[in-house]
Amino acid sequence: MRRFFKARDEDSSQIQYLTAKCHRLAHDRAQLERENLLSREMERRLQNDVEAMASHLLQKEQAIVELRGKQDLLVDHLRRQQDLVDFLKDHVDLRAEVGSTAEENSRDTELLAMELDQLRSELLALQSSDGKLVGLVEELYAEAQQRAELVESLQAELHSKSMEVEDLWIHQQKEREQLEQLHSAHQRKVCELQQENSNSVKKLQQTAVQFERLCKQQRYWMLCVKRFKDCLTEEREAVVQQRNTRNTTAGINRKPGGEASSAKISLLIFPPSNDFYPSGSVVHIQEDLSLLIPLWYEQK
Image (cartoon, rainbow, N blue to C red; front, side, top):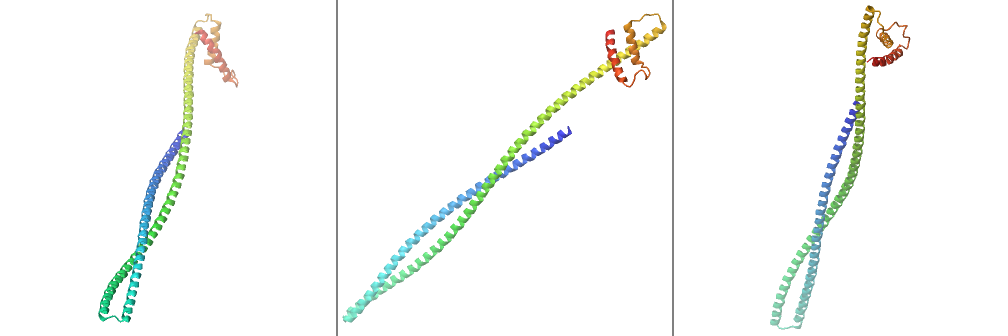
């Protein structure tokens, strides 16, 4: 019984340990799933950021291409204006050589001066716009480089997060397989323990039934021994009374069966010396009892 209860306590403690381990693994699995969802959400956000940065970079590149086209147009216009200035200078030199009048020369000079001032102002405006355009192009190029570096860093971070998510997924799969194995082992252990418990209960029930039968048999034998002892006491009293009566009345005739039973009972109650029963005395006493009991029932 002690071994049975000790084994049952050990099995129950092992079941509790396995149950706690299963709960802990389930909690770890839920935590890994939450981390996996968070990493996927972060991956989606990073992917959206990368797409937004790519579209913004594409817009910047288109703006740079348009500004370069405008710059080319302005450079062509500047070249045409420079060619026109050269042509006017040549025309002034040519008219000076021809020797036109002073008034015409003065008017032409004023006109040429006005045109030169206008061309100079346009040239300054073109140079300033060209400088602004160059600065804007450089700024856009630097911003494009920064965007490219940011995109590369985001792609590297996305790759690392993807690898981390993949590692977490593999770890989760391993934990899930381990949890399933532990659950199946736990179920098998529980079934084995239930089977052992049912077998032990059956054995205990059989032992209890046998013990109850033994107790009933022992009570029955004790009752039989008590009854037999009471009968022997009554027979002894009867024999003593008969002996007393025989001493007083010697002429009374006795029955043969009664004499035999009285002799047997007297031998049982008043045993003779040790020479009467040899080494197997217990066997002889049992044989005498087996002979005495039927005679006693016949008298009853």
